[in-house]
Amino acid sequence: MNNEILKQHLEEKFGEQLTEWEEQYGLLTFRAPADMNLKVLQYLYEDRGFTFLTDLTGIHYPTRKDEELCVVYHLHNLVANIRLRFKVHVPVEKPDVFTATKVFSGANWMERETYDFFGINFVGHPNLIRILNVDEMDYFPMRKEYKMEDPTRRDKDDEMFGR
Amino acid sequence: MELQQQQHHIKLSEESLQKQTTTLNLGPTHPATHGVFQNIMEIDGERVMETVPTIGYIHRAFEKIAERRPYYQITTLTDRLNYCSAPINNMGWHMTIEKLLKLTLPKRVEYFRVILMELARIADHLVCNSVIAVDTGALTPFTYVFQWREKIYEIFEEVCGSRLTTNMGRVGGFERNFSAAFYAKLKDFMEKFPAIMEEFESLLNRNRIFMDRCIGAGPISAERALNYSFTGPNLRASGVDYDVRVAQPYSSYEDFDFKIPVGTTGDVYDRFMVRNGEIWESMSIIRQAIEKIEKIEQADPSQKEVFYAKEADKYHIPAKQDVYTKMEALIWHFKMIMGEIDAPAGEVYHAVEGGNGEVGYYLISDGGRTPYRLHFRRPCFIYYQAYPEIVAGGLLSDAVITLSSLNVIAGELDA
Image (tube, rainbow over the protein chains, first blue to last red):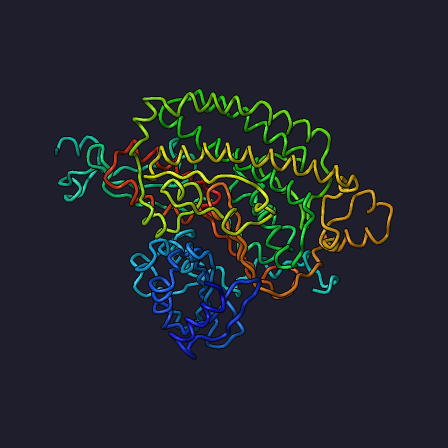
């Protein structure tokens, strides 16, 4: 199996629903509609042998209207030794994505971490609570609106360097 | 019962008085956890019924910090993930940027990276395996091999100046060429360490008490381990021969001839034996790498001066003597330190085989001086969630050695 064959299989199965095909640095990447993530995961798991969830994380794009938050899955077919990445985008007002914990037990903490930092609501997750941050925290720190440094500081004003 | 309550001024709830099991709080600072994490266990006599792990005690928001830092300053963050084998993390990060920049490195540099990464792996496995022995009650092997872990750190000192959080290497290679002291220390280690390792193995491998204690403790099947996204020695102990060095070779690992040790049951003893086997394989890889470097240098003596890729000049801090004497070098030095070097836009995932498994770097660059988003795939964080399942139904003392044999490193757990 290689990227082209895999792409053909996916296009046969899901047709036009998968978009934004890319192959950066040899890794097949595509985008799926947010409500389809579980169907794609299940298809890849059962029919294409992607039984290993390498990584699951989130990204925040504040400028993309109605698709601000993104969940990224990295999957690995250990037998054919091929990796794959797919993304789903959700609006920041209603960041609902189906949980992958039914397919991968390992997704449990990865989803908790993504919830903790990006506020993505994994529908059906057995225990969706904060994991690394304190429970009392009332915001999602990895979103881009939370700046790293205090903007009122003057001693770090570095417009001299073209920033 | 009433008398007791009055004496201690403690009012226990009715449920708690009727309950037949005991709640035990293991951690966050318990000597047996070897790190800062808490487990609230429900135990029935000596049997663990249920475990609720709490993590995040040393969370330092590395992914957020990385979004404000120029690329070369992120290396210091990777040190603090798995601090037992920091060079592997450093090299993995450099390789991620090199992948983004589409750089190819000279073979000599890649082989030196292999040597340092394998030394780090030996140091990491030595800590883990000797600590298993400590938790089973044998302190001697621990103090014995720690001297040799120290020798590895002395080799690191010769390369980069520090021991634990190394910040070793640069994008495209190393910061300077290797000194005579480095070669001498490496040679000394390679000569003397095998005898020490043999002695360490003879103390434990076939030790009846150690075997009785470890065999069957904390097992996990291959199916469950894969479903939990295990990687590294813990996965291989269950019998799956997945190793990033072989599956997706980086830094010229394809040039080396080595075996992947695997176990069968995935219990504490298998994990211990897999790590021991890997130490021997690492020794063999280092030996091969030294030979290959010698061959390169013999064939072309000018290679002796090659310690970074020339194409990476833009991302490499110039030598100090040049900075003080040459205008160009001074400008580049200034630009680098101020973090004014942009990287091309792109999305890259790069994985290396760390001490505990697949350490992945998922980097999204928007073409600026800092990453748009950087995510670390930390193997510890991913496999530690299986801990409640592994220890359920086992003895409390088995839970303790399971924790040390999984080699849960708090720095990698919390990022």
